[in-house]
Length: 568
Ligand code: NG1
Ligand code: ZN
Picture 1 (tube, rainbow, N blue to C red):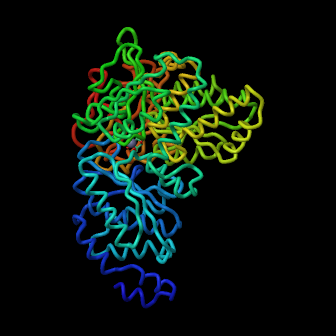
Picture 2: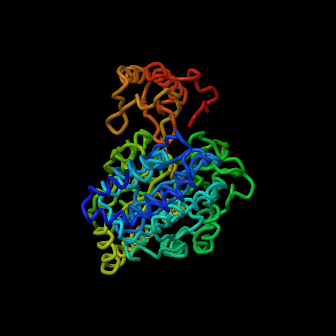
Picture 3: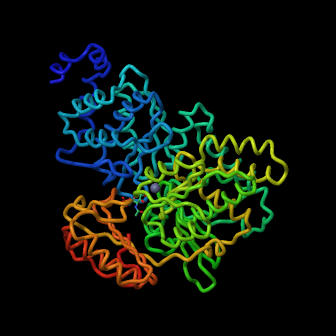
């Protein structure tokens, strides 16, 4: 089959395939054989499933990363992690040259390659090279990182096998947070201008900016200088511990769920805290103490505290975006620059946050589909784009022109303006421009609170979240649900959107939408309303509508019983 194809190919392409050692690929692929019949999809966060099903996917993503690297003539990243998912799971995603998520056409290639049966794998590999006009003689360089899951080390070795067999060079960073790998890729592809592509480079860049920034804070009481961090028993604990002494002048962190005993993401971490709206296990919280949680690969962060009456208050990605964008706007006003700031959210953003940003802060807000690549992309359209998912994944992006303008202002302007420009310069350095990053976001937030002299309650008090509820519904095929208007409206199955509209009308300040998950085999339901009871009822009623109209399977959705329901 391969020979037949080679005979009809133009000479250049013929030469091209001589550079693929097809014999070696077959031999190595057999050592990472695909369980026949297994079908996986490259979703919003790459491939994700039980770790024992992923060996062949890892090998093949090593191969694919080499092709992508050759095509883009850049370093490509491969991260082995399943983020906030259970410890038994794992996953892999490719990181494109500027730290972004993989280009959509390559996501399709990834799915084809991962699902090709053993005997078809080579053909698919050649097809991809052909379609993407990959010059196989080009050098390739791949950087690899992994989280702390027990399965991650072996799986990252399989990635390396894939890279090597296609003749790619690689650097294995070993244990890294996901955003740190994005940072490494970005640094390597921008000739070191962004920073040094080493773990020390990352620590130094962020800590220097943070320490310089917090030196300007007039409120330097202990209250502003200590923070409890739940590390989800993941990689964030290791990396924060390594980094701590670089920024200890400005902040002291107390780590919980550091992986020494508990299980990864189990009853702790950002996803648990956000979806259950309660504190993680293993953390003792005194009233009004500032606490935060990372997820398992440290790309999400949420804050929270207990008030004097012992009530739990969650400060999610929406409130983080609000704090950050309002501070940035203040600095711009001070410098006298009229740059355009935009905030990008998804349909999951709390309605109160959108209203506050638009009506009180007068900042334009945009809604995109779920998945950071959509938010990131939209945020790039602004001079300064702040994007956050409600679950705490986000960052702020500054265009190169803005960065240069600010650096100039920091040199030229007179006293007060100069100080503001300097702060902005530090903030630009502190944000991970390549990806949402819990460590970087945490330092930005801590700096802003110190600079503004805000307590966690004052921050929380910017606006009051509308009560909300998220549920999941099992259906036979979640693809029967398609959506439009940034996932806020269902197009199919027929009648579903009308049913949702009728239900929403029954409650005050209410909103609801459904969408198929990109990472799990479920349909997600979101509802908000003027009271928790109403939000719970609405979410339940919408779940029933999904169950009936979109082919629900298993048990009918149950109402939320104790205010916790079966949240995601
Ligand atoms: P899905 O499973 O498509 O809802 C979830 C999160 C996303 C994003 C991805 C990737 C929610 C509702 N969804 O996607 O925001 O973070 O995982 O990890 O939080
Ligand atoms: Zn994550």
